[in-house]
Image 1 (cartoon, rainbow, N blue to C red):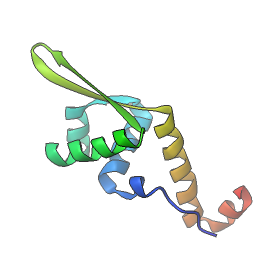
Image 2 (tube, one colour):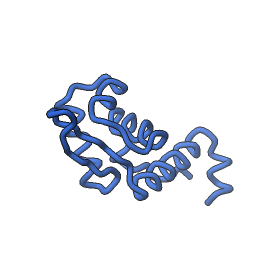
Image 3 (cartoon, rainbow, N blue to C red):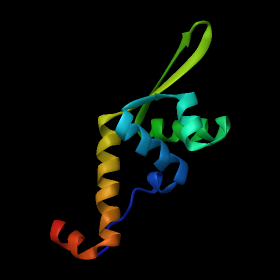
Image 4 (cartoon, rainbow, N blue to C red):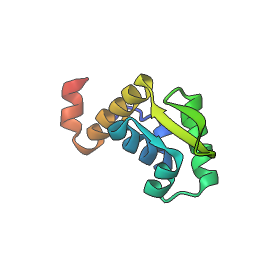
Length: 101
């Protein structure tokens, strides 16, 4: 049986952001923009959705008089990503999913 996937992580851009943050734990907005090749506006909207879900935190400050936005993955975000990945594996190998259920 296929288990439901977190609809928030079904977005390609949100999944890309979470995948990067799961490894790095935090990243500057411009780094995420570069890695995902997203526009600033789209990335900002998607990060806001992840923030509203409690998956990331956003800290705004200044670095040498320039605005600096840093995104950090939360423990809830890590757990959500790990569950998403585990359930996604069940779509690839349903027998493994049945063993975990």
